[in-house]
Amino acid sequence: MAIHTLSALLPTFQVELRVPPASIAHGGGHPMTRIALVDTGSTITAISPAVKGALNPSPLGKALYHPRGQNPIWIDTYLVILEIEPHTHPSRTFALEVIEEQPVTPGVDVLLGHNLLGRVVMVWDGPRDRLILTY
Image 1 (cartoon, one colour):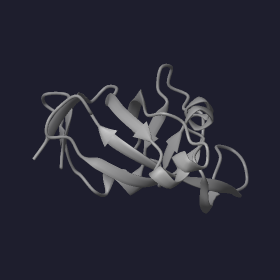
Image 2: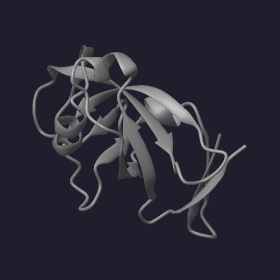
Image 3: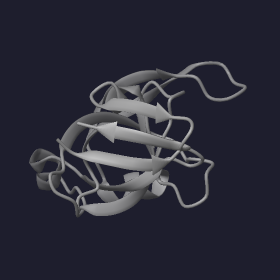
Image 4: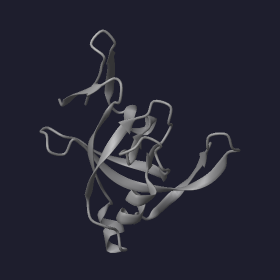
């Protein structure tokens, strides 16, 4: 079981992103490591336009998206393989349906939504000002 301790102020860590082999055969990009932010307010995980452009994932389906201050719209979803802290062992790989959305936090390219957070155990340690993820 992997355990990751994050700052509760800005719970970020490295993730490796890649596309499934079928997407590579259709022009998908190379794996990349980026900074991800735990976003408990997001239903679905989001990748930045830069990550989407570099990975070039194949469209998977549609999701109803609620942009801040706007009416809901249907947007494309993509299948991405995400590995948390790929340089640590054990690490774990997740196949995730993601949307394209630019995170507002500088330096962050991935927002981890409930479709990932629902697969891990998350503990908020308030007195120590940290967030612990285990899987």
